[in-house]
Image (tube, rainbow, N blue to C red):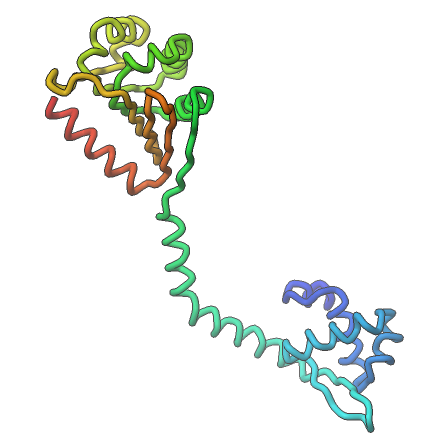
Length: 243
């Protein structure tokens, strides 16, 4: 492999490679001489020499009253890589812990107003299956045209949709929904009548949980987290089996 290309793979910058190879070939040299011979600006050359020294690839020596630099044995490259490997092994458990924390940390997004609430419902349409608990009566009264469009999209995309509904949602809205969606796509169960109606909607799909209020102030929150979504799905299954 070409030397410069190989050194670049070892995370040396182009100018660092130029200076390092020059010192390997020429031996001890002062910064002005190095800058002139490599066509690198003197001020920039000092920075490069400092970087190479930090990487233990060169060392500084006194040449009278002036500073001069010489390349270390190329074995220093190998030692530098080994040292990085040792450091990485030491901190790897901490890095993995941070990665796991980030992976399990829920992402939360807030939505306000009818327009943004529609975005939540549109997002759910990427799923193959949606579980919901809420009042379709409130949703149909709040956004009748959109509610119809949403149902049509569910049918068009062959999404399996399960509803746990409040009692008042069964009066007109449930028969309309059943008429639009086939029995293979849509199933509904009812909360006990004593709970009456509730002005909210909860959607669970994939790794997402949406909590939506359907009365003023209208807002929604979407939590994205596999662990939380799994728990909500378990709760939904328990409710579904009990109803």
